[in-house]
Image 1 (tube, rainbow, N blue to C red):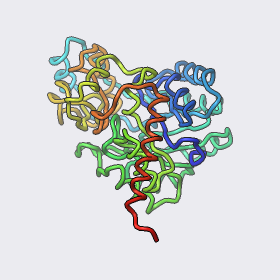
Image 2 (image 1 turned 90 degrees about the vertical axis):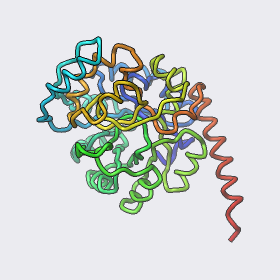
Image 3 (image 1 turned 180 degrees about the vertical axis):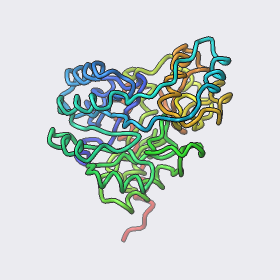
Image 4 (image 1 turned 135 degrees about the vertical axis):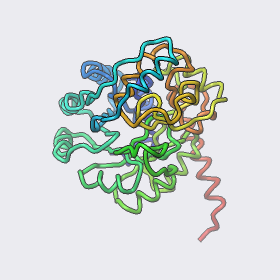
Length: 345
C-alpha cells in the first residue's frame, strides 16, 4: 500500500496534541498519508480521533502506538526534587504504565485502521498476524539495521527508518542510558542505506526532512516515502501550542537530544529546563514523563518540551495541503536538476 501512495509524503505521528484529525485528513486529501498519534491519549480519545478522521476523509490513514518498555528501577527522588526547585508547578508522581497498549491495539483492530505503526519496540508476531487479518498494514519504527532485522522477523510490512536528525522521541527499542541518543546514531541517509542492506521491505525515511529536495534524496536512496513531522508543526491544522509555534518561527534555538522531559531520548528546542537538566534525568520512561508533566503543562516556553528536528528553521507556516504540494514541486525540481548532472549512458 505504501508504495502506491499518490504522493510519497507522510505526516508523522506527533504525540502530545500536534497530530489532529484535520491534519491527517488534509494530508490525505493532498494525496499523502497522515498519522494519528495514540501515545498519551485514553482509549476513548483515540476512538474519537479515528471516528473524526473517517468523517473527514475516505482515504487511508494511520494510527501510531507506543510499545511499552520495562519498569525502571532508578531512584527518581533526587530528580523530582531538582525539578521542584526549577518550576512553579508541583512535579507529578513518577509511575510506570503501558499507555493502555493492549486496549489500543484491540481498538485499532476493531476499527480496521488501514495502517498501524509501532514506536519504541516490536509488536508480538501474533498481534501482527491479527492486524493483517483485520486488513491493516503494519509499520515498525527502527533506528538501526539490527532493529530492522528484528522487525522483519515479526512480520512487519514496512519499516519507518528514523535518523538521529528527527525531532521528538527516538524510536530505539532499548535505551542504553548512557549515550545522548540511547544508542548508536545514524543520520537518515546512512540509516536508510544500512537498513536497505539488511532487509528487503518497503522503507519510509524520516528525520530532518523539510524540503522537497529532502524527499527526492530519500526516494533515490531507496525509500518508498518520506515521513515529515516538524514540517507540519506550523500548519493551521496541527495542534501545536502557541509558544511552540513562536519558538519555531523565531528559529534561533539550537536543538539537542535529551532525557530531561520524559526519561527517553528526544530531540527538542533547547530551553532553560533542557539546559539545566542536561544529563541529570535517568533513563526512566514513562516515569520521568509523568514526573515532569505538570511542569510542561505550565505553558512556559522555558519549561516546555518543544520537539523539533534539526532543520526546523527552514519550516514556514502554510496549510497542510499546500505543504504537500510544495514538497512535490520541489522534489520534481530537485530530481530534474540531479538528472541533468548525471552523464547519459
